Every structure is written in structure tokens, then in C-alpha cells.
Image (tube, rainbow, N blue to C red; front, side, top):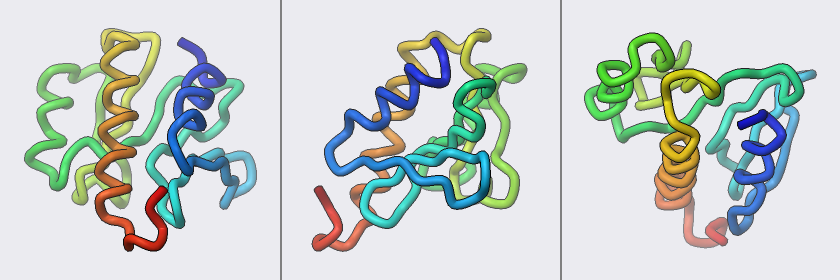
Length: 115
């Protein structure tokens, strides 16, 4: 899977839109909230996703894929992980993690912002 393919999957979600809040760092939002941090889409090899409601749930990824999953800097305590694609994590699992991140973020949005 490439960064462009992953971006396309993210943007196919209802209400999803691409933003670049920091120069060169692509994120995908639903409403006003980020559900995927893609960074440099052309050269990136990982995606930042909400992998649980807290650190305990997100740590399951780290236990299963210690070489390809890590807690995201600054927001990791809130259940965000960085998952490397093209490694041990199957593409299908990364796509499922994108879907789950989207669903968790949508669930936390005010009703007026939900797609």
C-alpha cells in the first residue's frame, strides 16, 4: 500500500476532507477533528490513528507489532498510535484501523458536525 492509496481510502469516508495544518504534513479530518495523520503522502511510511479510547486499548497494537507500531508523540496517551505500512502489519488491518479511527472520531463530534 502507498501513502496515496491510504489517503484515497481516508477521503472516501463520508464527510472526510484533506487539510495541511502544518506545511508538508497532510491530515484527514471529519468535521473539525483529525482522524488520520499522513504526513508526507508521497514519501511517508506510516499513519497516525486513534487506536483506542485510551493507552491500554492502543497498547494492543504495540504488543502485536512491536517493530511497526508506536505511541504517537504528544497525543499517544489519548489512544493514538503511529502504524507503519509496508511492514508486518497487513494492509487490511491498517485499513480497518483507519475505519475504526474514523468511527471513534465521528462518535466524539457534536451532532451538528457529524456526516
